[in-house]
Image 1 (tube, rainbow, N blue to C red):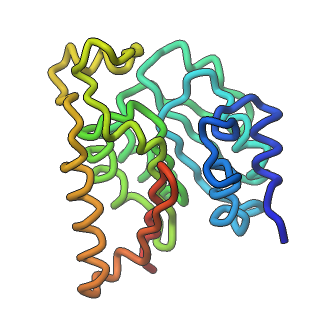
Image 2 (spheres, one colour; image 1 turned 135 degrees about the horizontal axis):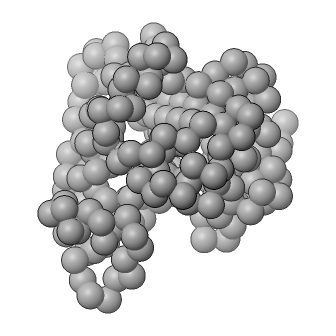
Length: 214
């Protein structure tokens, strides 16, 4: 069965996850995601996306997960305007302890997607903070990993508001990928040594999907 419903919904809502810049070998991010997310489509799940911007993805997720509770996180207070029935937005950083409190209140997240700063150190901090809050059998997705190779300290790199904010806070922006690769290799080693918390580590173009054990 061809899975392209999510891709079509994403294109309709205008999320860039379905465009040419997020497509490899004729499959967009959303074609890839649907392979993993189709089983959740009608379940009552808690879905967390780090990074809101224009809210297109949140609206897409709400249409796709018809019984899901969709949560977005962004440091920009303006993103609160994207709240609607079934969609809540938390204003904070992507590695804020408030997200752990939110997860506890909800009984855990089923799926967490990191589409926030794309700064390696923050991606790692978010994973270390939030993966323990993921339900057993849940999915943690990191996307736009092409950015993980960029030297963001270069004046030739365009910085959006998130990068400028974190640069001013002294966050390490010089990407050499070693830090993120170490995280991935550590997860694979844990899995290979029999750690029941790590079920699978899957790589696609610019995407890593980690499935929690249980």
